[in-house]
Image 1 (spheres, rainbow, N blue to C red):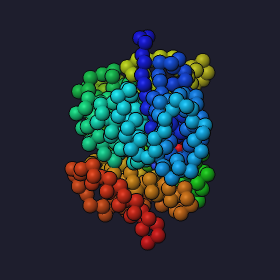
Image 2 (tube, rainbow, N blue to C red):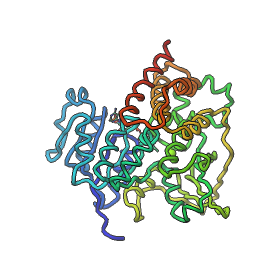
Image 3 (tube, rainbow, N blue to C red):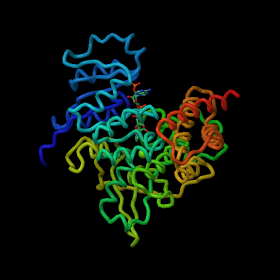
Length: 387
Ligand code: NDP
Ligand code: MG
């Protein structure tokens, strides 16, 4: 392998993806170097990470938390920035090769956007960026010749499998979904599920928002929209199949009927590492598939009646325009309300449907319009919950 050396900035280093990224860095024997880290509330962990990885900068995005915090544990060589402007500064710094977009939610858009505008490669975990503003984000990436490397495991799998054939020979892509903790629940059983039940994902350890999205299958809806823009595919070429073992991370079918897939145990360190070392591959810390033991791979069609988010995701992928930003923000607010005990599980998707149904649709919105609608949709969810 060539002597790859990449300087990275991790936006959201204290989260699930951020922490896995640092494990990949640690195993890279100095070839990946941390230039900057950002955190929102977990500033003690940010200091620990800084002590271990010695970045030039750390950014604390919440000014109120940052001012209250005792920064004495921050290493001498690491400088502190506070607020979103700090994110812009490190995401565009000349020293940075790759920005890892690992913040959760639409708040992740501005850092990713700044990085792309500066021509940086972006290892994209924050799918909300593409759901919200896919066409605009892809346009700025193309204009600045900035590469977007998918971290989402399904999209990493599709990205890898697509490389095996010609684009004009593609029939469709098939995103796999674990089905989440309620795969076998009846609609009636889902009426009484608790926050704790919904947070108990069978195959993946992730942050709370995406874990709830997996339970409603809104995560797969968001991933259909993410794939639609990332790979420039019409929604009728994007299918979903339930695969409870989460070993086949997605599949690509070509015209002749050949189906190519990417397999590995469920461990985000693999797609993270591939995004950071692309186009090279190297030894790394991700778990390996052990085919000396018997292995069962099951596939079944999704049930869109029990998981109506899937239908909604497809409709939004078809509609384009402002629909993605509204769905995304409504879902973020509805998930927060569910986690706070304000609405039952089965109200999350209808709340999103309702806000989408009466939003002022525009086919070609500007970024400012999308940011305004992001705020509007959250307010609508609050009104929907407490009319
Ligand atoms: P986590 O909740 O574990 O981490 C979120 C990160 O974002 C934390 O570093 C958090 O900081 C930071 N953050 C939260 N709110 C803000 C804010 N307002 N401003 C700035 N930073 C903020 O999430 P995950 O790591 O699970 O997910 C991150 C992204 O990756 C999501 O978009 C998710 O959809 C995507 N993804 C995640 C996968 C996974 O396996 N976890 C798989 C595929 C995609 P702090 O903790 O300091 O408050
Ligand atoms: Mg995924």
